[in-house]
Amino acid sequence: MSTQSLAPFLIVTLAVLVVPGPSVVFVVTSTLRQGRAAGLVAVAGLETGLTVHVVATSLGLSGLVASSPSAFGVLKVGGAAYLVVLGLTYLRDARAAPHEAVPAEPRGRAGIFRAGVLMDLLNPKTVLFFVALFPQFVDPGRGGVRVQVLALGGIVVVLAALCDSGYAVLTHCLRGRRPPGGSSRPVAALPGGALLCVAAFVALS
Image 1: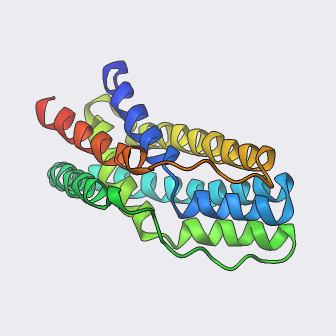
Image 2: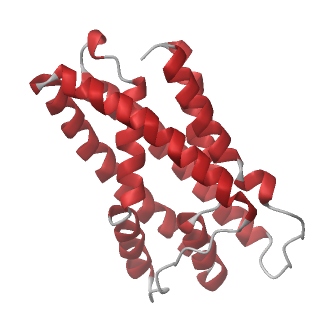
């Protein structure tokens, strides 16, 4: 992966991570109900599940490149098309706040951790996101496909941990206060625009 392609990767990853979704709601809910420590435990669980996805993706993509480079090319084109569809879907739904279900709050920090792990492991959108995004930034010609995917995945996990932890700390600081009003539509549209930009980058590169 080149330095030139790292910037779009960071932009789209941050845009998707920063916008509140089920994971953020889980962290915020855990923090509100049981405090900052519980929120950080929820973050640890979520990122543990995310790490499992990264390892599984690295094994799958490296095996695909080794067995059929042409199939990898098809996956890359299909992934770019999926990013376009996903980006348009985000833009279409930007007018409505996310209403995805959040798992029932478990008792005890061990239960929160397990719930976080399962929440990420059982999220099919996470799998699709990795399979669609990573091939756009992996260069088989540079060798070490598995290493490239693990490096990209490591970046995602670190950024996710920072973003989710930020929500936990912010929620703890604002605990008991009413959140300010205002429209969330511009923020909700960020991931859609970022995904479309990445798809355009892939098409022009």
